[in-house]
Length: 511
Image (cartoon, rainbow, N blue to C red):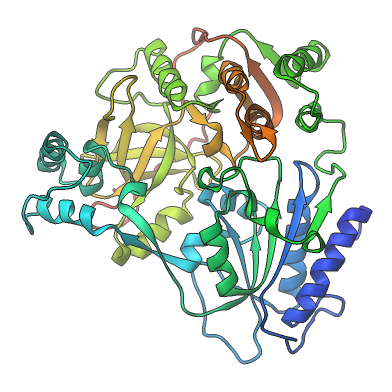
């Protein structure tokens, strides 16, 4: 089974495809003939396709999607779902994050997030009381964990900007603080492909099994498990007969030093010093691996430094802004941002889809172009988007070292929220890739000295594996806590020159 006649599958890939085909036959799809047949049963079936970076998981997911589409299976997305027809079979391709879903969409696969297709958010009533009070619809609340000073900051901010999300941020809250969970959809679906399944938690997995009669999980056992999972991944508990293991490296035809380093981390006798020596030796004769004595500040403008500790992330961001002489109360054109979500109520779902269709999704890398035509609006370049430049309402947070509350230079009433993008944690980087990646090795050295172990693997090895496999072309291993001087001011001339069309969204959603 392949849409490309020149594509040859390895034995492990062919065996995995055969096993998935057997499961899909039970779901009512005959891949061999490309036809729909009556399903054989209702019992949920789960398969896991497991392999490290470069083993061909994404290749197989793409080929399976094409085969199912050609067989007449209806692909369900969060954007539109038509009325179900008699005998119809459905497929949804999911990822735990918008960024991971966007990687698949770049391959022509209509992936979406688990939450967008299955759940709707449920907000904590305690924090809803803050919003009601700020809007003048309720009494000043007493919220456990929030001081009077925090509530005063929220009120002062709301009085100036009329932004509920911005006010909650000023009080020290994030979206994850006031969204308590998600309400599951009632109508079941047939087949679910879940990419980046190592990021799934147990609750999401149980919900997926209730929604889908057949699930195929695509996961990397060497990545970082969800924080709340104590180092385990949902596919670890599956019987061995339901795990399809991929071993051979397929990502690149030529030898890849980055993948070689990633796979070397599986050696139980390899310690941190030995791994760094391996990197140094590779860097001596291969330009795709670089041993660096300091962070390259020019690269930070387009590719974030990957770190372990949040304090390191914040300090690197502020060092980046300092060497560029960025003002305390505003952004410079050319500064990088990371989209942290879209703060719009459910009634504005169409507006959210409009923004997301333009690439403004959680985890998206964005370049700040300048202030918009209205207060709180920003002109933005969404990296990798087909039509990258737009103007949208923005809530931008700049975190400061040793300060609990972020500085918010721009805040619309509602719209897209952003963090600075010069550095990002390795956990947040899962599901993303960049052409050039700088890994801040001193953080991993600290993790190695702490001796922490996750699912039988030293934590530093899992961090290193995820970090270096984010690099598509060049890995830069930074070994000193230093920052280079910029060779040029922040620039925009490397971005595609296009006007920034305004999105016609009311109530401050975009300019």
